[in-house]
Length: 120
Image (cartoon, rainbow, N blue to C red; front, side, top):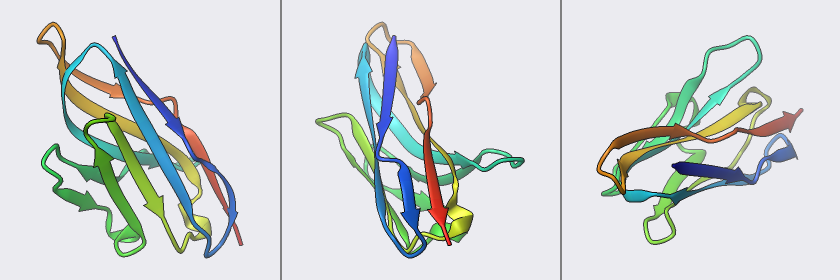
């Protein structure tokens, strides 16, 4: 069993910053790609940013230059630093992680989601 625990969401004014964290735990042999997705009311879940185990990153065009994804492999934690936040960034943010469990099985898990609200 793998658990992803997110933290760091909240309410912030436009132009402000937040930092999200997602810690993985459980029967994990290796973590591969980790990422952050978001889902606004009435919209589909979309990729915000992703990072490979080697540190390569990928961002949605809407957040490039404002958000930074990083990871600490020793802590099995992925972070999302969000700067210059806009009201349109308001959404529930979900952590996603894929890898290999202690039994050798592939897994792909989601966190419970954390609300980010940006007021204008």
